[in-house]
Image (cartoon, rainbow, N blue to C red; front, side, top):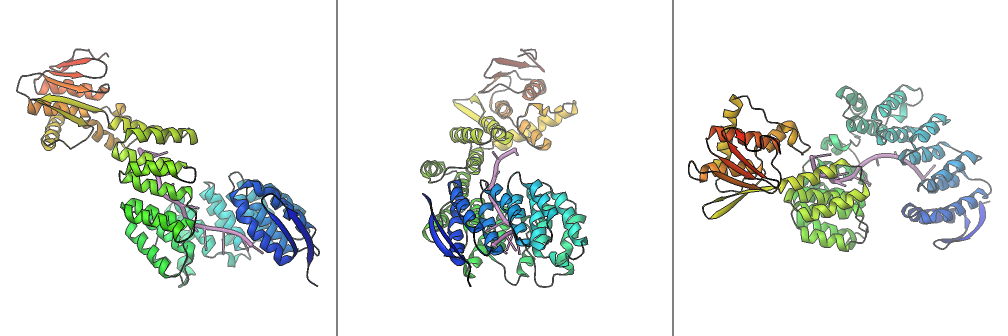
Length: 502
DNA sequence: CTAAACCTAC
C-alpha cells in the first residue's frame, strides 16, 4: 500500500495540496529555489516539514529531502539541525546533507565538524563535505589533515575519489601549502587514476587532466573556463566556452561569470556585451549582480565610463561590492577621479574595514597630482611617471644621470613618503618620477642656462623630492623655485629657503 | 536526498 498523507497548506507565497510522496517531492522541488532566494519562504518550508513528520509510515528519503530544503537557507538551517536530532530513522545521507550545509554557512564550521565526528558511518560525500568546509573557512591544513586521516581510516578506501582528492588539492593550493603536501594529495591521480581524471582546482588548471575525463560535466567545463580566465588566457577560456556549447551543455549563471571575466581581461567589449545580453535573451537566465560586476569590469577597464555609469543607474539588481571594486579599478587605470569617489563611497558603506579601498583611492588622487612649468609661451604639465611629453626620453635620461651622481654622494631614496601600497622597488621607481622632478628636469633642458627654473605643483611637495631637488640645484648649479600648494621653496646650491621646515 | 565550478581595486 503506497504511503499517503493529507497535506494542505496555503501561504501568501506558496500553496500546496498533496497526498502522495511524489507530489510532496514536487512541492519540495518548487519551494527549494524560492527559499534559497528569499527567507520569507521559511514558514512555508517549516509547514511542509511539519506535514512530513506526520507522514506514515515514516520515510527516510522524504525526511532527507526536507533536511535538504531546510538546509538551503541560513534562516531555516537551525530547523534542519533540530529535525535531524528528532528523526526516528536516519541514514548517512541525512548527516551528509547537514554537514555540507553547515560547512557552507559562515559560522557553521564547528558544528559541521562536530556532526561529522558523531556520524555513525561515513562515505565519500561526508569526507568531501568536511574537507571542503575546512578549506572554505580558511583552514586548509586542517582540511589536509582530515584528508590524510581518511586515507588511513579502515574501510574508507572507496572514499578516496575525484571529489575528495579535488577538495584536498584545492585546500593545498589555496593556502600555497608546500609542494610536498600538494603532491601527496595529487598522488591519487598518478597512482589510481587511469583515464578517469578528476577536476583540479583553478590554480593548477591543467588541461590535460580535464582532457582525461571521460565525461566532463558542466562544473568541470566551468572550472576550465574560469581557470583560463583567471590565469590570463582569455582566448583559451572562450575556446572552452565554444566547445562547451558544441557539447550540448546549457551554461549556468556561474559559467557566465567565467566567460564574462575572460572578455573583461581580454578587452573584448562587443563580444562581452553580446554574451551578457544572450544570458537573458537566449538562455533565459536572470542577470545576477556578479554578471553586472563583470560587465562593469569590462567597460571600465576599457575606459567606457559613460556606458558603465548608465548601466549602474539602470540595472535591475543592487550593485555588489565586486561591481564597485571593478569600477574603482578601472578608474585607477584611466585616472577617473569623479567615478572613483562614487565607487569608493559605495564601498565604504559595504565594507568600511577594507583598507584596499582607501589605498586605491589615495593612489588615484596621487596619480592625478600634477606639476607644471612655463617654457617659452607654453605651459608643460606632468603627472607622476608619465611619458606623454614629446621630450620624455630626454627628461628621463637626464634624471637617470642626475640620480647616478646623487648616489655617488650617498643619497638613498626615502620611500616613506610614498602612499602607494606597493613593492619597495616599485616605490623607488614611482618616487623617482614624481611630477615635480619631471618638470624640473624639463626646466633644466628647456630654459636658458643660468635662468631660475619655476615649477608649480597642485599638492605639497614630498620630502624625498625636496631632498632630491636640493641636490639637483647643486649639481646643475641652477636656482629652482617650486611653488607647491602650501608655499614657495627656493632651492639653491644644495639647500632650500624653507630650511627643511614647512 | 548529499560533494566539486563564481568576477575584486592594494
